[in-house]
Amino acid sequence: MDAQFVSSGAPSLSEHVMDELERRFRASQRLITRSNIGDIGAEVANALRRELDAANRDAAQSSGHLVNLATEFKGRWPAAAADLAPAVEDRQGYLELLGTIAAHRLPDHESRFLKLLRERSRDMVGDLRSEILAAPDEVRDRIAPVNSSLRKSPFDRDRFLSIRVKTNRPSAAKEFLDDLRAIAEGGWEDDDAETAETRFRTLARIMRRLESSDHVDRQWKNQCLDTRLHVTFLADEIDEDERVHATFDSAGALSGGQQQKLAVFCLAAALRYQLADADDAHTKYGTVVLDEAFDKADARFTRMALDVFTEFGFHLVLATPHKLLQTLEPYIGGVTVVENPTRRKSEFADVTWERR
Image (tube, rainbow, N blue to C red):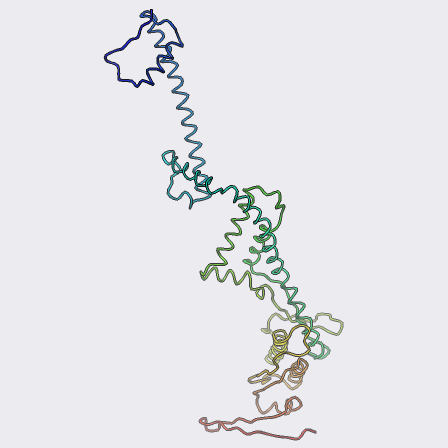
């Protein structure tokens, strides 16, 4: 006998719930009577508890998965999820963010990003790295004619000075080149999104430092991009067969006269390097003013130094003590004597002589 049971003490249920319970009871036993309704109710209740336990497990698993995804998303794109917590309570915010990403077709832009990263970065970053690496060789090419001129003016008896370029990059420049290689080299066509993003993060970090006005970053940029800081210069004293007899990285161990001679030779070489291109016979600007010139050098060293300036085509203006006039006479075309006997007023007098 069919029956419907309504308990006056039962909570009020929606029509949908009543229909679902009716369906479950009827699925268990089509004919419900007073004698079997208790067993049928227990069976339906047990089934509901099992479904509830399964649903709770699924919910806990889904919650954990959502938290993991949200945590990973915030770690990779913190700005995009700045107002969201990696929690189930903010799931609606993440769904809205997903909708925005889909509406803006960001996956399509990601493909274009990978294409640009492959093509532009490989070319531009690779070119920059190649230029930095090639800079020391360019310096050596420009030093070659300087050394050729130095070979025409003895530095000492049967000895000549030769400038040697040594690559000596700062650690910051070495790390910079390693980063450029990581961006530009490798199998670009085989890059997945994660590898491409790793390249991009490296590139973005470099660009931020290059654009920064912070003092530390400006120093870093200077060390990385100013290739003059990537080389040091050594002066080798060589013979006619180019055998090296001494190498100078400074003048600290030399006597006063030797220091001055080395300084003058290096000065002449540096001026030739700065004021003339590799193929120029003469410098673009040729007047050199030396104060207290050769005051510590003997006559032989002085003539050697003057010969090297003459060989490089420089016009010298020298301020020097009277004692060197006889040594300097073959190299100069006029003399002005400056005196200040009273310490209050300087007096000038031009001196002329006939060349023999």
